[in-house]
Image (cartoon, rainbow, N blue to C red; front, side, top):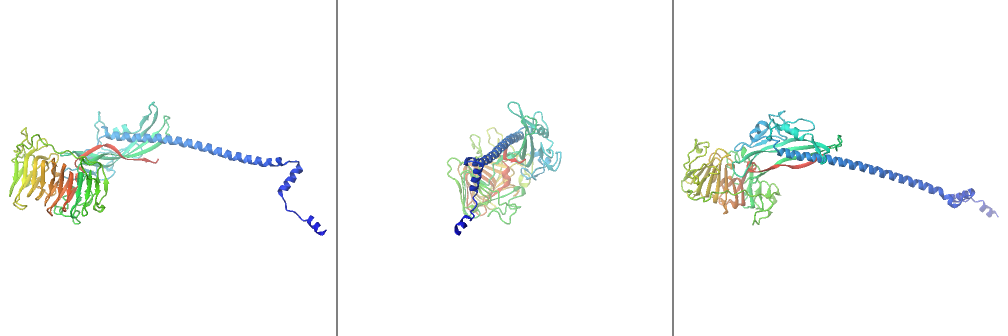
Length: 591
């Protein structure tokens, strides 16, 4: 009995569900009615979540709409700015703009001259400063169509009809220019600002006389303002571009093969560069021009810039050094098998790069029937020949005594059908052949003297069927162009300048029309530029004193036997082609 009573009085654990059922029963609620409160709560929670999602969707859609509209407005403004860049490019091409010419450069701009022979100019700093003739001297040359600052350009007029000041033309043509849609609605406007960041002059053409022209590089920025015809600024955008013409020099490489270039042999087979504006290679004389390039004791020597290139291929031996780039052009001449670069990367101090195809300049032409009865001159021991023969000079002294005379007339070396001869490209002095043999290279060796002009814009032209120098010396006084038809060989003591060792290679241009190989060998030291588009030019071999100063372009170029080539950097600006003003770099500015 005691145990049963203890069991009845023992407390059981509390069960909430049992209590709830008891409560429900006490209130007269069945099982379904008891669960309705929970369902209501769940429905309210679900509606709350859905409402939040709907609000988020509406907000996102609205934000996307605004973002899309803003993007549309910014794009419209950006295209207005791009239109401004194109309008600026067209303006610099037009006669509404006028460049500062060669004769004006030293007056208006802070520039430095390269000196003789061509007196080309290069700006002293970037941006280019106006020296005089602007609203503010010693300040950047610029056109300001918006933003801070003011236009600062020389007081010169353009060639439009009627002519106006360039600064006025800029303000009228490129400031707050309205842009309308095809339906006539105003879309907005653009304004331009431009800064001259580089100025130089170059010579155009294949042969002298060259036409000296300026090459300008402008940094152009355009501000596009989009209004959408509402009279309010809805968006703005800035675009910037570098605007300039592209100059392609005729003599931009030390060696260039329209098919290929091969350089092999001892360590003296090399290229380097110098600047003839600062004197001869290696200093006051050419004494250091033979042997290895880039001598550590030589002055005015640059271990860069003396590029070697070819449309087909370039091959360099293990002992060769190119102080510059190797340039492989696109598309070689017909029948060329040379392809790409072959050689050690250590042979090239620059880089092996791809470049555009370089077209060969035209070979010289000769009158019908040439050489006909033109004279021939075989030179032997002790012979000295001065060309043109028996010319009557208009003034003295003769070149050998200092100075350069004006061109002679009425020389018997003139065999033109019209009977006139003045040494111009239209009426050159004509010679059938010249051969130099005998006498060794000592005091009894033959000497040939070509007398040129004192004016680089009007050199003396000689048309020669063949020129062969096995011994002796060729001296050149003044500016001379030799057009050679069928044969060219230079050995002996080579070609020198008769007035001064400081005369650069630009004084002698040799244009070869033949297809047989041109040979420059032995101790031949040549200072010239050579164009042989239809032939191979072979340099070196047979002597330790030979070297070449200048530049060569030919169908093929071969350099062997420790023969150095010294490239004059002035050649990269004298002779070539100039394209129209174009955009060479482009970027969008953050507003």
